[in-house]
Length: 122
Image 1: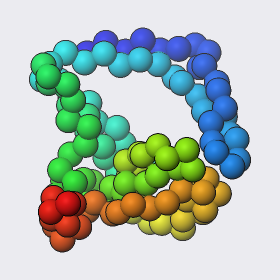
Image 2 (image 1 turned 90 degrees about the vertical axis):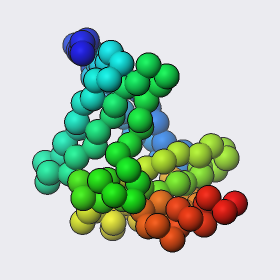
Image 3 (image 1 turned 45 degrees about the vertical axis):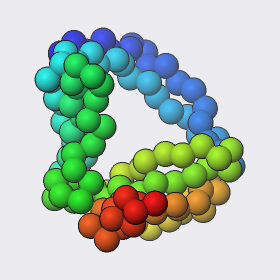
Image 4 (image 1 turned 180 degrees about the horizontal axis):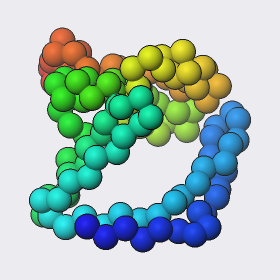
């Protein structure tokens, strides 16, 4: 693993309805079969694992991710681009406000066996 920190961080504007600054703090380079864990102040965790064919972008959607305090949701923005977002436990109100301000559409929550089986059937 190699981390290249950007000092100062690159700052750019993001957002659909309301623009806000995002800071690009660096680049993390993983070798195949390496993993990093990102954590929040409250202890929620998010793993990214590199393989020789690409990445495991999340822990299991209906297993470890929930035990790490995160809930996956598929959303669509007004430009019809799709994103998988991870909502931290206890932050639903902030997420709901973000969805409203950015005019996002929730396509489906992906944290239950039932919702994942419905996606699989489609």
